[in-house]
Structures are given as structure tokens and as C-alpha cells.
Image (cartoon, rainbow, N blue to C red; front, side, top):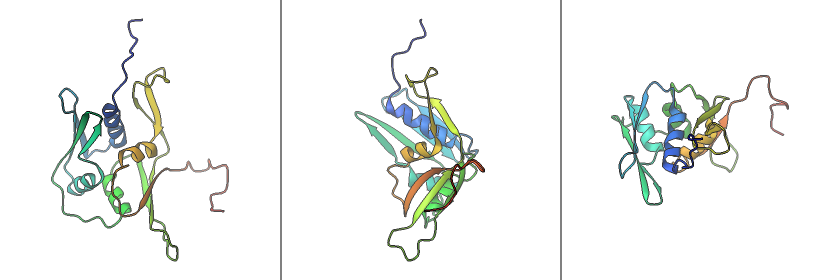
Length: 179
């Protein structure tokens, strides 16, 4: 049993794995990860100025994990686009990303609560390596909505935002309407 690994991935490695899984398949985004220094860094490169501006608004420049700080660098030239809604912001950041289904902000006229935006991802299980001891392959199996909630937890957004998974047509067990 020389293949036994008892060392777990540190949280900054898991964060980068989640970030990579969320944007995997987006043709406008590339990652460069450096864990070999005292300052771990993930560089996200993009040549779409609007997407760069959206990424800069949504992602922190660093994440602290005890005495380790993960630097997050967005490499690209941002436009001066002002995003007026969470819906617009997420539509720009996920344009061309196969994981993204749509974003919607239902009309809330006459109600006391602020606007709510739903960012909806395709209906599929996402897997990535995480040293998960509960999985025989060491993988974490999750949904895009869970990854997005973690990645964008600290983002300051113009409206309340929820991350969802799209329904599979014809697979709902109950009627699709509010009570």
C-alpha cells in the first residue's frame, strides 16, 4: 500500500480547484497557479475587457487562510463598464461558460424586499480532486451553485443573489408553481 496519502489539501488549494471548476470550459479564461512560493498565487487571464471588469468586481484580490494568503490576480485590461445589476454582472462574467444557464431578476414591484437575482447553472454534478477521504477517488462531487456560493461569498452585489441549478425538463415531481 505505497499509494496511501494521509496529507490533505490545504484550503487555498481547494479554493483554486473550485475556481478552476467553475470557469472550466470558458474559452476566454485561462489559469496560472503557483503554489511553490511563500505567497501562493492564482492568475486569471482574460482578453475580454468587460469580463475582466466583472471578475475584478466579483473576486477578492486575496483570501486569507490563517498565516497563508492566496493572491488572486486578474490579468487583462478592464473596461470602465458600470454594472447596474447583479444579473448583468453575472451574465457578463459567465458569457460563453458552458456551466452557466441564465440569470433572472423577477419584477418585485409593490413588494418591500430588494431585488433578487437568481444565477442559474446547468444541471450536472461537478467533480474535482480535493483529498476527500469519503470518496475512493479523493474527489469532491458537488453542484456549480455550491461552488459559486463559496467563490462569490464576499462579493458586494447590487441585489440579493442566489445561485441555483436548472431543472431537468420533464423531471419535476411536483407542479412548477408557487404555493
